[in-house]
Length: 359
Image 1 (cartoon, helix red, strand yellow):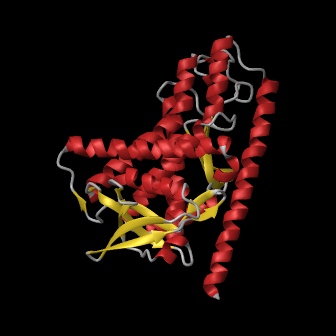
Image 2 (cartoon, helix red, strand yellow):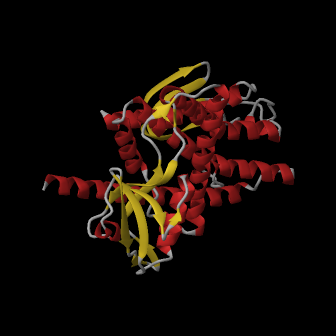
Image 3 (cartoon, helix red, strand yellow):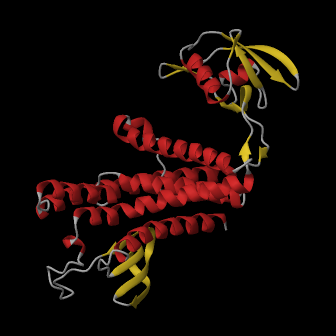
């Protein structure tokens, strides 16, 4: 049921994205002849007012199609053909899917904040969520639930800054002793960490987070509601952009963290176990990812079509068809190849985990 829920959420987000393109065209009086969720052979298909609506076999995408004047016997100079519209109107149609996903993600976050509230301000220190057996943190005596308050008699501070300060100290102290002060069940202890050297950086094998209470509080007013939502939305958007940027600047490292369709569905299934709020969070995260992904300057994506359109605006004439076809074909093989690799990798990892659980 959880897997079905995550697939349904994915389908809804794709539908919303394509609906953005569809409405942007229809509301400007631009001809549209198809609206599809998925690729491949049509499972359900219905034609209404010269537009064919379809649901296809592979629901991992979708498209809005525009009529070909030769096939549909339309005057090539008809002003309602997309290619004959001014550049800014075409830019609106191309960008509408990305904008739709961003608006949807923001709306979902508003609903989520309204329903569950916002966290209290972080308290001093860093909370240890988990430690890995036989790693530096566990060897030193750190346990889940501990609060790290000081490092080398220096107060760490609060929030993300505190975590960042500790991580930097650990990374630069490979195989060196670090004295920390922790609070455990109201008592204070001093422990000695010796970070292990991994690829030239110190690691301790612990999951850390700012010291934040589990409880939440209701927002005081509309201003606080939107202030917190803006912060959360901006943070998710920036982190997503940085993740995709890492594919270019540090591919080997980032690719290990990249998730394919199988992993995304698995994450959605896990979050859906948390109930409505988990599903909303999953929907917001994926909606932002869809927006950023489609903004990439690859011809098969909205970003690529936007680049071609803007170049046409500067040149005063379209990019040669041969050039468009060559770039489109290369990006097609890139995207398909990456998707296949991710599906194989994520499926293999799932099978390994299941095999271990069954032993």
